[in-house]
Image (cartoon, rainbow, N blue to C red; front, side, top):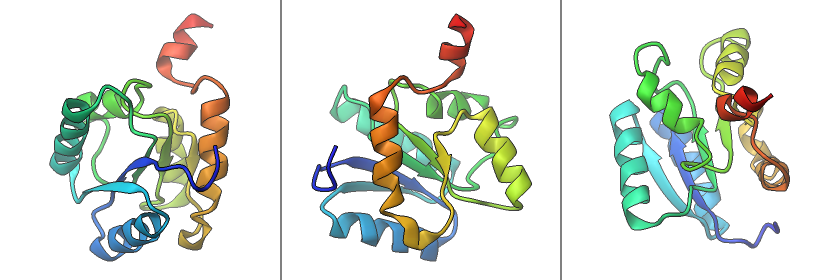
Length: 141
């Protein structure tokens, strides 16, 4: 997967400046970017994408939009390979809580710094190269 590939990406973050910066950087690279400011927006964008195409999103960047315990259905959708090829969490709150969320959601990575958008291609290449670790995959072990 090269940097020139057109990707479908969902950026979900409650902070409008962070969301705008990520969205702008990704659109400059020619990608289709959907935005979500809260959990309901996230559900709506996932449904809209699924209605438009049978292909999963290439990437979901998600930060602090919901609590898994309060929204288990959304958490389950975010971990499904039918919904996305890769899930990357944007740190929200402390690093320890973000790491714990990443583990619970079987995220592919946690985004370190905003300037590291190029690292997303490496994450996507790894996700495309093998099965995503998810609760479905763990059940087979």
